[in-house]
Image (cartoon, rainbow, N blue to C red; front, side, top):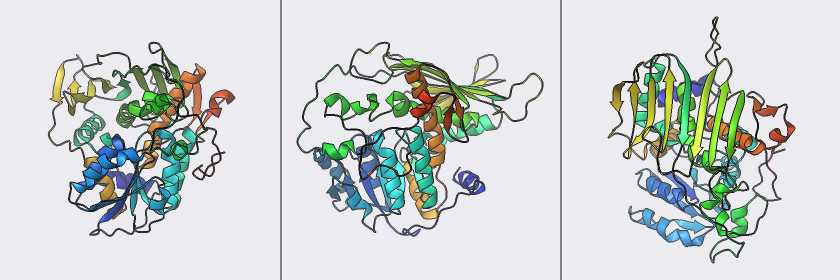
Length: 437
């Protein structure tokens, strides 16, 4: 898949210059955001023999001790802790950064890192809003940087095999896919504004987003459910399934998004929907049409974060529908894999347990691409396309109507109110992306 990804990128005119890290050299990395997923990634990168974790960057000094132990237990030197990641970007010895911040920091940090000559691994979703995603792509290209999005399925061997089977015609001509996120999320209740905890640099945490007073229900992890910082569970977790479904369909950007999204269950401080049903139309995505055939493809997304049961035996998954069968891609009992069903709905192939799905395959692909300068499995443009679907779904939920999308200009047409939501308002800040207007 690495070779195919590189050939596709080359055909699109994507090229990367050699970084400061030679093929045999150690890659010096700065971790930006080391709580939760950031701490998990700190351990994954620290265990790589050709990586030196030199900086841990976070606005909350209380998370440092747990993260630094993951580095030191590998026998590596103690990394430097800073709350302003610009100190790491100023260090010419740093080759790459890993960004696991709240969503509103993904694009600003990625753009600054690219402009500083660093390669970037950034967690999903790519951006807080649609316009930022395109700015990330432009920053990567003008600086010839490797930028990998944290959609790990792009490097998962079982998912790659599943997509190869779809492309080989295992289930016939594929016309539709469904992605779902139906896991149980917690009720967060209501909380009053308060003062930030000791050791938290809340000014830097807010960054270029409009300033809101500190509130526990807008801070650690719960920021996902506030529009000022997050993209809801569609951007938080649904993006993984949307990415697989889009990959299976072989499509890039849709021409229309329709459906609904609202709070049906939770009476709490969450602003983002707890229930969604969005359908994306990809016009003439199937190539030249024939009489009686539209050439369109559809991708459906369903979200319910208030139920304790899943769908098709999974809380989060993907179904791919072809003319002669269907495929389920997801996780069963903790193991990723896929199942193929024939035209009568009978299970024809069960590959739902796989022993070769290494958890570090995606970071490893990023590191290998730093050395080879090949496009990574989840190159930022690929990640941007999947994230666009999340943004469009959220926009449909917020304006409560169908939106038409121009995939070339990356704008919503005929709806000024909806199109305004492809951007955001920023406060004056050193990290505000250039070119956001």
